[in-house]
Image (cartoon, rainbow, N blue to C red):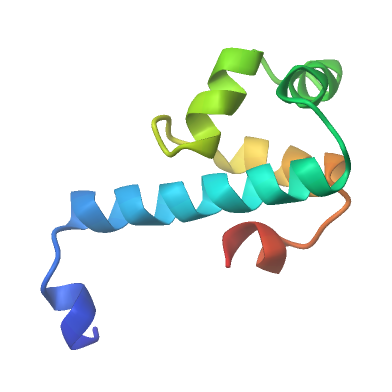
Length: 86
């Protein structure tokens, strides 16, 4: 583990990672001129129980994102895991 990682708590690191992933999702969504409502609808059509409000919370790092959601976001946003998780 790097010295940077050892100086922050696990919760702090998780929050930072989730905020970064949320920002990536927002950028990728906006590049496709997709609203939060449309993204939520597309996720719902894939069987994901998610609302526009939840999408907004994910984008600002206020809500944990689950692996099944990441898999669907990759498909819907036509992107790579690398672009989602960088």
